Length: 470
Ligand code: ADQ
Image 1 (cartoon, helix red, strand yellow):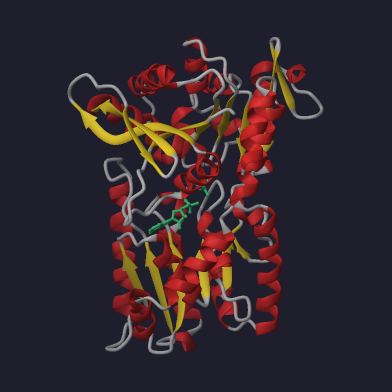
Image 2 (cartoon, helix red, strand yellow):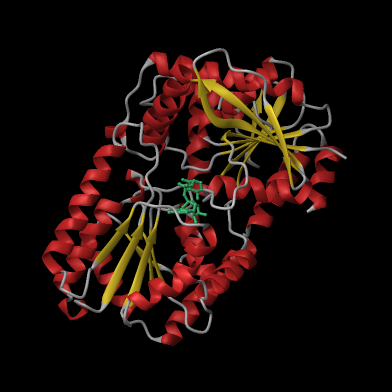
């Protein structure tokens, strides 16, 4: 039987207190089904030559972690990945800072990944590479002699060609993606953006009617695989956590007020500054809610070494301070803004306790918090999801209250509508979203991707064994 090898920039070994991000949840779900190897950077930087990968085995999954030189890491991760690709792919040109030195480091670190991974590979492996940090890895692996089936999934949006062309090396980026057998995206928009880029670089004749791309003698499959959540796990975590001390303490402290929750990494793409303005507008426009609603925003700091993240942090502290200074009473704080992590089950308990889930990114590949909010609700008395039209999740969760996150008035009105929505309507909207979540849960995501790899040019029978083992 063949083995699944997942590769991502960062590996988080399972720890009790760890708060896994979306990518981690997805990869673990895939690996736990079939066992296999997870390869990536372990979180340590060194000043000397990095050593050989460290190997750990936990619950049937082998974790191989590598070190990176500090200088390389700064240029590759803080630099190219997070100051060039992340802002560009999220349509934030203002945050983009391009340098050739960063680009060279990005290429170099991808080659280092390939060199360190090659000796660990077996001929029957199937390789699944994750996200924008590792776009050139497929080419580097092929150059190093890898012949195994290679898949790539992009967790973030893929920009329209007119945006992508801002990148001096955009054509190389598109060509690099064609070294994979399967390239996966979150939504049809992303897929179309990729296809229009490919048409521009390889010509219209490279595109087949069925969506495949011809590259010399090879075919590349580019498709949509919307990532989902494990509905049962989220529900179980949420139900169990509601009785836990930390969630009970939070609920008691509301003193009967309605709870509105936001849960995000602190990132400019998540639209928190705009969200805070919208909330302030809501309190001004609908003063009957003063003292009756508590908005808890959980936003742990991320990427603190990347310029731009300090600014957003300051803006948010000021905005929360302004709203609280203006509207708070001796026994009521309108916004509770927390820069800290909570264990996943606790978060799910908070989401279940909320009457309103506020998920208003300015751009997001998918946004799993939106899906988790829906899955965590009590179906008999569900809360209402307010969701940005610019999140990938809005393509599927179209019975959420959809808002343009830049339109603070519309977001304020949506909060008011959510708070006063009758039970029947809440149930209907929730039931319809649950159907979508069931169809596209995390297991379906993994299976579909591995099935596509199965049908791709190489390694049919080997991949089938993995896909069926779930
Ligand atoms: P992220 O940008 O990290 O992921 P998201 O999809 O919201 O964003 O996933 C976050 C995950 O981390 C969720 O499981 C959530 O519960 C958890 N999380 C978020 N905030 C947390 C907090 N404060 N404490 C603890 N856990 C927290 C990227 C893309 C997304 C895409 C995912 C998966 O940017 O668009 O949905 O990958 O593909």
